[in-house]
Length: 361
Picture 1: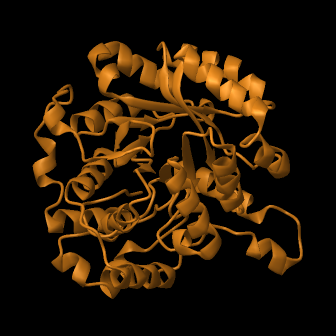
Picture 2: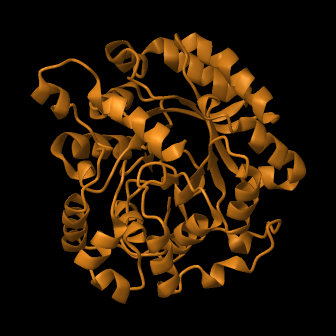
């Protein structure tokens, strides 16, 4: 499995864009990307190590443009330390990931890190009011007094019409206000993978109290009419936007590299170029990537440090190369497969869960 490498265009998520293997890592080594990234001690906390940051909407907070999506892993604490040493200052977790206790142990070992860390977690309430005790449970698991951001997790997946109303409802507004006033979470938002997530964004704009939205995204879906309008509206409203799960399933990075030889000339791997393509969209503050080894962290960090905006022509060429490389599962499913099959089965969610099982363990 593989993650990123340094710099070109890019919009893919670690949790989403997997399957390159040793050949991709060899290509990254050929480009010389990881070499200079390994010198800092794992416990170093100097500000100079930090990655570039962007404003998170109008929240008054700045976050690193790359953030670490965590999961339950025997080697996870080492990767937390390594990512921190490379300048990542935004960690993403959730109840369902099983990674909160691991983060708690890391924080207990590095208590001075908490003031510089932007920490987000998630839970799935059955009612808006349930989010308040769930936040207490998340704090207990993380062994911290507060989180920077509390998400409603995977909004729309269980009851789309009901949850569409939540994000503009007085009930959830009162809950969000109470949470922020308590200081237990500085910001309140939601994550979503739903095929009609553009409607959730528009509903949040109408409600006017959601701080941050993390959504399944890639550079081309973001330009589709419905999604583009929703992103524009959210951005203008001051909602912070975080990209995740940019591409899912198997992707042949070697094929992409052969189709786009200019990447090698620019010192970029295909994955790095995908990250650059996402960062080119200034509406997004950060990209959440599940980085599963130190090589992936090095590659992604280099991509963030060397980021350069891409042209539309470059992004279009990258899109064509990705499609030609044949991803087996679509991270931006809009339900067309179900409609074509004449079924109401949620094939998009089924393939997303299969991706988690087959490619993320």
